[in-house]
Image 1 (cartoon, rainbow, N blue to C red):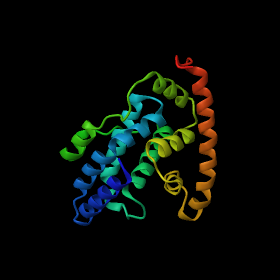
Image 2 (cartoon, one colour):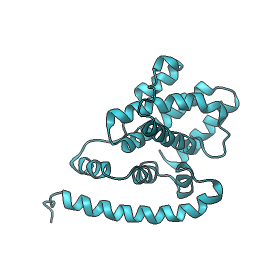
Image 3 (cartoon, helix red, strand yellow):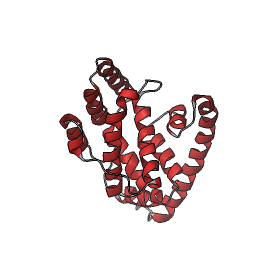
Image 4 (cartoon, rainbow, N blue to C red):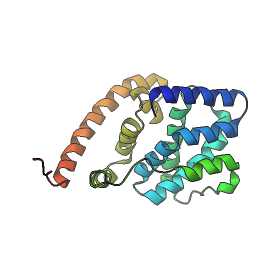
Length: 199
């Protein structure tokens, strides 16, 4: 999704929110951001099925928490922070309950059911997924937010739990960490893949 399309979606979400249509906000947010958030959680979980369970729990939290959202950030940034917190809560409490889609309104449940991972299986992506699975959760989150989420450094700092006071300072540190992570991934990927026939 382009930045322009995200801006249009955020305006529509705010319009629905201001009109009191929270089910509509949840449905449209999941239609617009669901695939990228699903991929983010699968990356953090290092497992497709576990990521899918986390995504279901996240969707329930999004639906139930919308009334408390204060628009201090974009809804997308808030949703990513909520997804990350869902993952953290699940690691602290492995027996966390799963969402049953019958608990949420049908349009929201339909948006959850139709959301799919935003990636295809290829040799390079398989190798990359294998390398990524070995990363620490914080590095996986950083990678997902910057690469798949195309998020600004300040927003990434907020998603990772930094207050507005420390987010500016932390964003510079995150940028350096990301550059080191990119170099590591390039080296590991080059070591796993056979040389191409073009060489």
